[in-house]
Amino acid sequence: MKAFAEEVKRMELNSIAFIPDGNRRYAKLAGYSLSNTYYSGTQKAWEVINWMKKYPKVKFGTFYTLSLENLGRSNAELNVLFRIFEKELDKVRHQPIIQEGKIKLKFIGRREMFPKKLRVKMNDAEEFTENNKGKTINLALGYNGQSEIVDAAKKLAVDYKENNLDLEAMDENAFRKYLYADFEGPDLIIRTGQTQRLSGFLTYQSAYSELYFSGKLWPEFSEQDLKLAVDSYHERTRKFGK
Image (cartoon, rainbow, N blue to C red; front, side, top):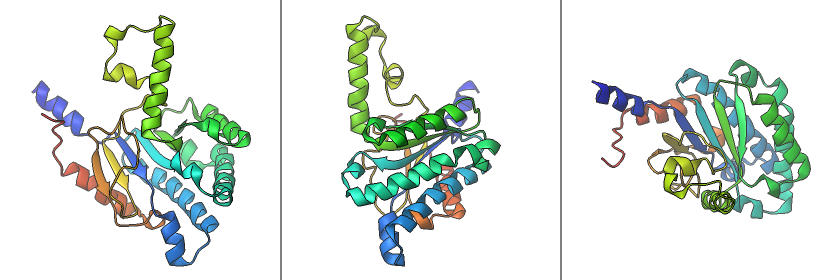
């Protein structure tokens, strides 16, 4: 009976991650400017967070907001994105879903690569929401899964050098504490945009994540599409290699 209860618990959907792909293709198809489309994409993220209220057992949501590779795009495009990010961060204190859902925000990635003004706003948003006990929303900015593991290994090496680490006690769970954020790895990863790959997203955490690829571009993603993904997850059997 205990084993059955543990298996049911493991099948619960506690953590969802999103790869919101397709903004630029949507802009081209719809004839919209990149600025308008990226703005729509950020509003879609707020919508998705709001839709997640219908799944109270989901405690973590993670969005692949901007990869480390994306930072190699043109200055003009990055400036558009940075301005949008700044405006959205300014809304955090007055965003209804933050208050109603008691949302805690966490930014993961190499934030030192962003302009100082944007970094300050990230820190302010984290501090403002740090005591919220509802869902935790991780926003991956300047993120790459392999880089995260490298950065974690560097932190571990420093601890070992300073005699603050017992290597014999190190295991997968202990190593996770050196990552950008210690959160429950995603049970389900949803990618929009028709591309079927993870693109360096949550490389360490996604070892046994279930994957769902939507044919919709990110601005087209709907509440019904989220439900289809969640329903698909619940129809699967997770064996974790056993």
